[in-house]
Image 1 (cartoon, rainbow, N blue to C red):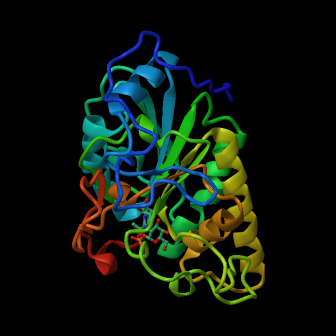
Image 2 (image 1 turned 180 degrees about the vertical axis):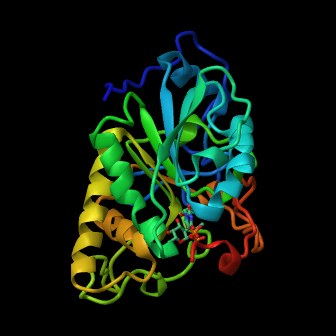
Length: 297
Ligand code: UD2
């Protein structure tokens, strides 16, 4: 894993002057109690970030699972990513599928590539998302995924609708769940049975994160996927499945291993619910789907 240095831009660029006594936004939380930034439109300067990070020539990895009928989401997903995701950076899309012949040919910009890995189709749809942690971990450990500076692990039934770039870089980054950003933590859908490894007591936790996106450096992704995989295995042996499968285990992990950066709901908009007033720009949105029709039987 390459050492990531954060330099300033090589030549000074003109940006609006920030003032210590003037918050760029006053309607939302911009920094957590453990001092991690929360990313919202208006809280960052894209030009300044790109001038800082583009010279470092980063390669960004992305894992995507498209098993059984979910291969149909690949084309719109990749086409939208080519328009909005990490423009001007090198990107490797790592696609895990049981039907490699259904991976579409999408025109990619220079420096961007698709790598396809075969994966098996588990009989239960829950098993497909549950196994992602294990499979991603294995592919980093056996070096099938390497030489990426940041890795993003994403659901495939989504599309990019706006800029999604360097403002999301962090050792470990997670996204606020669009359904639970403004409720008391005792109402978060954490796993509440103490018998599960994903158990979170009602008075614990800070935010509820969505499992459709997890990002970070390879060593951080190795740690989180290993911890979740191990917890999932213990639950399996004990005959218990957490309420929201790997999302419950991810949330449990993030209660104590707090992310270094949090992305607001701009980075995961629910296209089937009204957009909250605080969301000025939707960058990554769910795609309408018929769960019963599409899930593996
Ligand atoms: C939610 C979460 C998801 C995961 C899941 C666990 C959102 C937007 N996503 O998604 O991250 O926590 O709950 O229950 O809230 N997949 C396949 N083939 C299948 C089934 C799933 O490839 O037959 C993959 C695919 O990449 C998909 C992902 O697994 O995007 C998550 O599965 P889902 O989209 O069916 O689950 P969903 O929408 O309930």
